[in-house]
Image (cartoon, rainbow, N blue to C red; front, side, top):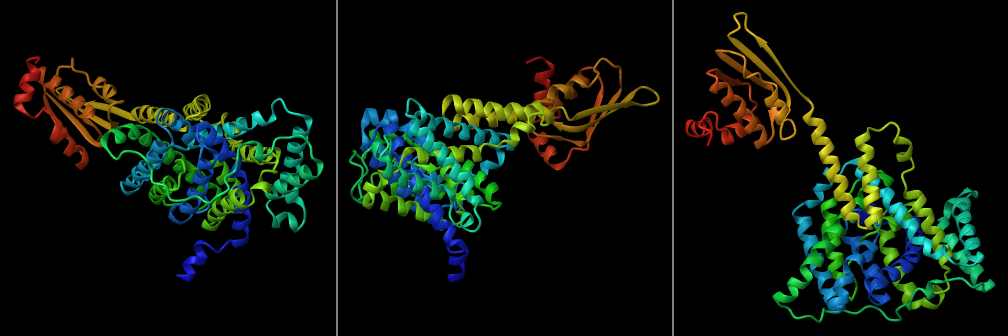
Length: 496
C-alpha cells in the first residue's frame, strides 16, 4: 500500500505542490466568471471548483488533470437557472453525476477510439483560440498599465525558466503571479484585480440537499439539462484526458474518468456547487508547471478553498493582468502550431475535418457540437475512402459460356453501387461464378447488392454460383439474403 501511495501520490511531490498552487490561483477568476455566466452567486462556482478538483484527485482515471466549473457547462445552465432557480440547478448537477457514473459502467469511455487525430487537433486549436479570446475583455478599453503588466508577466513566464538552478525549481507562472501582485500592492496603480470580479466566500461549504419536490415533474424539468451537461462534461473531460495523455506520454483509464466525473458532480451538488468537468486550460497549466500526479489536483482544490475563504483579502489583490498573462501562455502552449505546417502535406480530407472542428467550436462556443461535426465528417471521409478500395475483375471461359467474377475489397453502403455496376447482365452466359474469397460484406446494403446481382442474372436465365464467403460475411448473407429463398425471390422476380 505504501509503495502504491508513493507511485500514485508522492513520486513528484515538490512539483505537484507548486503546480497545484499555480492552478488554484488561475481557477479563481474563471470560477467567478463562469458563475456569472450561469447566473448564480460566485461562491457556487468556487465551491464547485474546490469540490471537483478534490474528488477527482481520488476518483478520476487521469492523474494530473484538473476538473472544475467550466464555461462550456455554465452555458448549458443559463435557461434552467433563469426559469427555475439555483435549487433546480443543484438537483440537475446530482442527476448529471448519476448519468456520468452510468456511462462509466457502460464503458462509454471506449467511444474515444472513434475520435480521429484530426478532430483532437481541431478541438485543441479551438480551445486555444477560445482561451485567448476570453482574455480580450481584460485587454480592451484599459490603461497602459494593464498592457505593461501583461507584457511583464509574459516576460517572466518565458524568461524565468532560463535562469540557472532557480529557473528550474519554481514554476514561472507562480513567480509571475506573486511578482506582479507585489508590484501592484506597492505601486497602487489603477487596474482590475480578482476582487473586482466578484465577492469571495467567507465560509466553508456545508452539506446542502436541493430544496425541490422529489416527483416526476421535477425529473422532467432537470433531465434534458442533466443529459446535456453529462454529455458535454464527459466529452470535454475525455478529450482533455487524451491531450494530457499525449503531453505526459502516459495512459489513462477513460471509463474510470467517466465514473470519477460523476462522483465529483454528485459531491459538488451536495455542497451547493454547479456541475463541472475537466478544464483543458488549467490542465495544461498544471502539466507545464510540472504537475504529474494526483497530488497536484488535490493541492489545487484544497489551496483554492484556503485562498478564497481564509486569504480572501490577499487573493483579491492579485491583478487580472497577471492571470491574463498566464492564460495567454496557456493558449500559446495549447495551440498545435505543427498543424499549420501540416496543412500543406496532410490530405485535404484531414485538413477539412480539423478546420471544420475549429470553426464550429469557435463559432458556437459549444465543444460537443464541434466535436460531433468533426467526427461526422471524419466518418464520411473514411467511409468514402474505404468504399473506393474495391476491385472486381472477370474472366470468361474459352467457349464463352461461363464467366468468373473476382471481388476484392470491402462491400458496404458506400461501395454497394460500384459492386452492382461492375457486372454485365446483358452478356449471354450459361453460368456465372462470383468468387468472394477476398471480399468482405459489412452490412445489409451489401447483402442487398448481392441479391440484386444474383437475381438479375437468374432473370436472364443464367445459373449463378457464389463461392468463397468468409465466416462473418456468410453469417450475414445467410441471415438476410433472399436470392436463395424461393418465396422471396418469386416476389422480387414478379416485381412486388
